[in-house]
Image 1 (cartoon, rainbow, N blue to C red):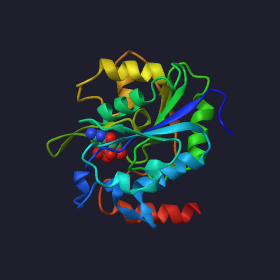
Image 2 (spheres, helix red, strand yellow; image 1 turned 90 degrees about the vertical axis):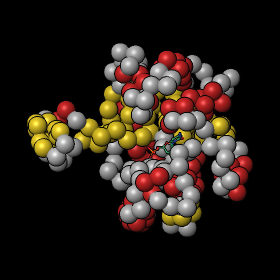
Image 3 (cartoon, rainbow, N blue to C red; image 1 turned 135 degrees about the horizontal axis):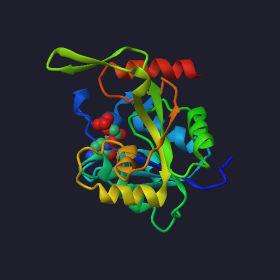
Length: 231
Ligand code: C5P
């Protein structure tokens, strides 16, 4: 069922994924019979939550037009940008005239193919009445160390540190304006950081640990394992 306030999905998919050391961007690597990005998009589309999904794709990307999902109704293609934040802003601009200022936007990495419908709905349920929005995140189970060079300089209280995941859920107009103000700032590595720079305090919502980001070659086998467990 669609939420009462319209929700839109934005998928930055214009990265090259150097750490995978593969012959193509990581979102096009094979995983359980499909490419990584096909899994990600089918999970968003099948959730039944979104009005449309805007996907940011590099203009030199030969792989995207080959996928049937690129022509699927409800999938909007936008040009990717230099940094992740530029790609997200470009996808938001592609939604201009369709999304209203107070509609929700859930930004989700193309490289996180194990996202569950349960996590999408949980995030929306917790935040739908919130003034700012927030993100899925994971608490830290390990003891955390602050380090300089190879020496420990402090032990950090792990209750204060969470790992940011996606989706990250914000109001369309507020997110667009925060990203516009932060343009060119390298410290904006996720959407929440752009809102934080405006003095706002996004919420964290505990997500599932199987919502991994494909970053290194061994992550593909782990993602396949999680997908089998989820069935
Ligand atoms: O490189 P990293 O894993 O942090 O990228 C996260 C997501 O942002 C990926 O889905 C990637 O394709 C996307 N991205 C993008 N435009 C860029 C850089 C990364 O859409 N310029």
